[in-house]
Image 1 (cartoon, one colour):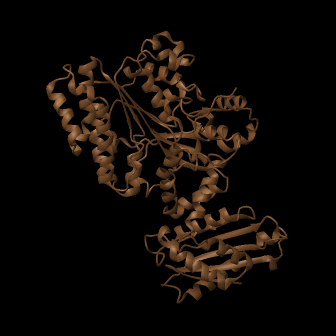
Image 2: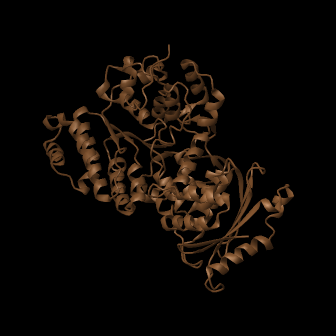
Image 3: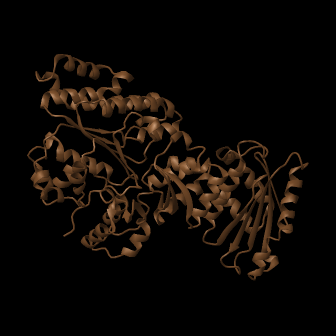
Length: 565
């Protein structure tokens, strides 16, 4: 009989107490402990079992669960090891989660962090009345519960470790879940510099100068560059998705997924693989994200976008939408189902995300939106990788993100524009394109002329990404990109030429030094289509010249003019 599936339950103790569905990952406890690293940071995509594994660690090591080892771990891998059994329930453990620290400004973020620290101290309130703890330290803990400034907050966990060691006579294990969530929010909210200063102080006090620390384990999505917050942690061991360490401890292997499907009486393994497989950890392929699989099993085999729709896509959308023209060019390649060679950095420098394409792809790879295979090591921490969109679920997520770029105020201007483009209604195209430009140009940083640093090509490439998403079932869309004055050609080849006309688009930014009006820019765009004979490849495939529509787009800031021939 299949076990009950508790979707969203991340408390290891509750899962074991109620005999809920659970895939045994307790081998990670043994591997981590015997690795003997002082401070370990494991980076995995979101919803990849990080919180459940941290909860598992807490249940194993914490004195809070002393004497419950056989109940909670009986029958699991770790309990088969006699030496490990003797460690269960023998350490004071501090568990910290930054999962809820999501604010759009620095002050609110610090309020969240201080609240979390105050609640942790309150859980150990027995220390306040114990003669084992010095009076000075007891008074310091009481002051923390009453009031906490930023300097005090940075040293709270250090102080708590000291008190716990005095009480138990043993050093402390620290478990920190989602350490980088506040930093993702800080980057998106524009207060990265402020928060990184506090985090550097906190990490130094908690993990570097903490004499009462036995070991520490933290989890996150991205490896934040050492110079940002980890500058003092020379002993930190970082395990990224590029590493083979703990490769199968987070996420489900294909063998585990198929066994779970057998338990639940589900047989569509090929479809499940297409939808949810694709993650690569180190040299280990065929890793599945647990969130999608758990939901799939719970929904009795219903294939949907579970992981990709579980929030957390805001930064991805922001980086793609406001990214450079070159970033969008490369993303077009991925969205068409092709792979892309790119340099990948093992660590993410948040300050570089707006300027470095490789930093963006590195973030996407670490976050699970892309999967990649190493081609070669370029230098320490830098790899040349072949990237692709992870699976069907992730592709659908990207397509939905792109579609939403052109939806504003509840009106689907973009859909209307596409309808008129397919009909050949140039006047309506002009009306709707100007509405699109009015509401979306600011998002894509379109400039008033090509020499501005705002790179108007960003909008055009975003526009084409929208075409690729909305017309992918009817057209094969290819592009011939040019630099200079933002010329950008697009060809839409119908999948069924007897139903749809072929379309050629030429984008051109108004050149105030060489053109007198937008009308002249439109004529230049249309002439370029003729001069370069873009229609020749379509005609060679048997598409009649009368079934090929040609449009010239002229842009000057938010003003758009479209003509046809």
